[in-house]
Image (cartoon, rainbow over all chains, first blue to last red; front, side, top):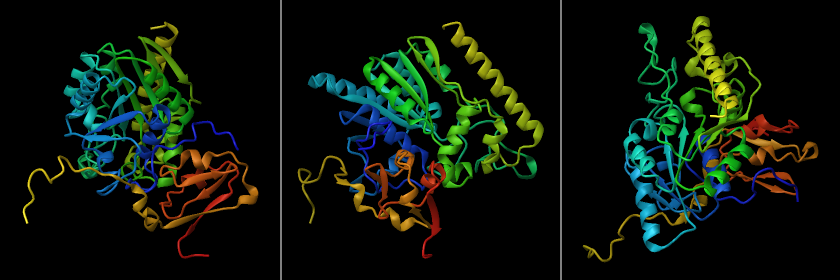
Length: 296
Length: 90
């Protein structure tokens, strides 16, 4: 037997209807490897609402409760209350929603669940737009990105607003655990999922989930682009355990240009715009390092 | 004939594994592994989004019934022993 670096047991079946090279498929695969089979998922309208397969098929070995787009937070609250009423203690309740269903449409239900300290894990797989419905911009779409609702052209109508900082929003709720994970670092991902499982209260996991059709890139680059996001410090890997921030992967400090140039959605950016993205990334990274060294 | 409400399931439930979906039919490029050069690093298995790769003694076995041909395995392979060939080619 060859030793593998992540648990070998699979909780997904092949045959999901995700696109070739889908990052969200990897997010689910690693998450369940960390959490195990005593897990129940609440999934709203998002890519993962269609990815388990056509009825009557399901690519997961754990149960799923589908909810409306805005109701993931309510779904996990209800599931938890039901398990508590039945006296079931060993089940991990997980909300699994996309970026639109988290930072835009699902924010109020999530905020309520966090405020009540619902005992559940909330995973946001962030593909940075409403990919399932045809790549419309969301609050999590980064500045300067092309989407079908920010189509550019002669008017240069690309996204003009920065990405919503969901990690800061969640920390403001005083939750016990929040972490960022990447599909390029599965060992780190599984470790954080296991840690989240061992804690109580609302735990939040932010996963960057590359989307080949939406990010306008070849499907074989999914893991490479996720790796570059970490190495360029654009998507740093860290965890906030009881208020204390710890960076779990420093990254190489590769220029952010390397991350942008393999994605068609950024192909229109000129040099000064790339420089301004680099500047923002550097500032955010410096702030993160400062916060880690201050132990807060 | 109309069914009584007692015969209708309360909610539609998916109860079959997705192995009934032959997603390998989507494929435009097929991964071909040169087993003799495999270093058993298991990276291809680790990064396959579809769980279409199983390990036999550390060497990948790709299930072409489900492989969608995304090419992540070929891109990530540390020994560069996986190549993507167009479907229909030898």
